[in-house]
Length: 266
Image (cartoon, rainbow, N blue to C red):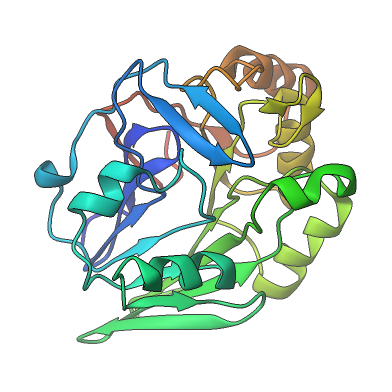
């Protein structure tokens, strides 16, 4: 069985290959120059081109959706993705997706799990907490969830992957490792997204470093940092914090269109 891997399409859109399972995360296929509609009158223009479109995707076992925003589930995804695919997401997103005909969308409440099985291998998806905004502007943004994916092949310890979703750093995120155990890898959403001029709603480089310091994954992969005009903190901010603080584990960068292993290596 090959190593767990991540193929980066852009924004928070990835293809995760975990044992016999293939998942798509936060599908965003808008082209460079198109606008994502974020609700409540908020819009943002895409700066980058995704590496794939829906018709180029491999066969999927499901979609992992951290929240329902136009840069995480866009109008292309709504039109072109298979409506029979399982989607694991928040209750808020599930209700909207059902109205759009995605009948297999499942709400995964915080600290509850859904499990996929194939032969002797299981993949458990556990919803973990996240917060997309300070209390002042929470009504403007949808609820968000992080996820811990645990791949158990029956041979050795399970492989555990954390996907942050569009959360801000909060000290109470420590509960993720307290409950789920050590993280073999973490995919962190950065970008320092700001709305209404100055209100931070996703982690910037400094908060991303705080999260790594808190959770101490063996491997960290940053994504979601340069694709939209609302992103204000480039990847270099996070890299500088990483080296300045000498953060634990390995940092592994991935470019759009590339695939990387999620296992720690030389």
